[in-house]
Image (cartoon, rainbow, N blue to C red):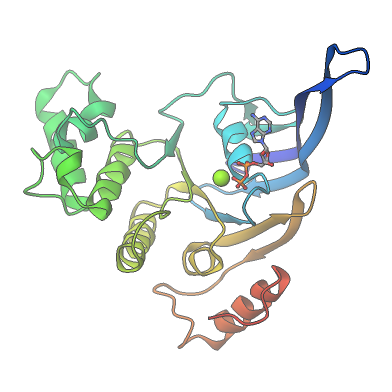
Length: 264
Ligand SMILES: Nc1ncnc2c1ncn2[C@@H]1O[C@H](COP(=O)(O)OP(=O)(O)O)[C@@H](O)[C@H]1O
Ligand SMILES: [Mg+2]
């Protein structure tokens, strides 16, 4: 059984606008916009699937529906064969940046997900393990404002992993990072996934990230957005476009598909 099954997922929004009528009164009109149409994707346990698509194509909307924050207009999302009643942090954790609480230290922020644990020794062990995993030893007592962007992002990642959710969801996790920090974070997320093999869904508009990271890519697009292409990426990690011509060729094809003929 797939871990996550997205079946015929469709999402429509009604855009309400006020219009001036001829008699001087205002009238509210509703215009229905279909953002996602009949999305079908199955995700296996432990798989990292990268959803790729241009800005505004409905990626964040799709993640919010999978996480249970928003209802679908039609279709369904099954987790372990069942529909989710309500979002639960132990099942799905949505990694979002700027998710750290500024008045708590790194240690307290990461420990938030463990606050229900009564065994203090065990709790501390899990905390230390995760602080080490994201290489933040020595910064436990710093506040988020005292960290660089990359360190904040690593603390956020630890905060998600400490909960040990079944599914990790990441929405454009590297946005706003400088180039080198982006590369480093990407490498860390790949290593982390290789190590813990948690079912991970990432959305991005970055073709390079999707190809370097994913076990599979799913491209969505069009208006409304549908699945345009699904492809399994059987390439060893660490991946590199220069030393892997096949991966480079695939990248050129994807750039072309997304309307760019000269990829840098
Ligand atoms: N709550 C909402 N009400 C109306 N329209 C929305 C709402 N949320 C998103 N949309 C529209 O859905 C489309 C997709 O948005 P989004 O999922 O944020 O795209 P992406 O994450 O791919 O950039 C956009 O056109 C956006 O305006
Ligand atoms: Mg988005």
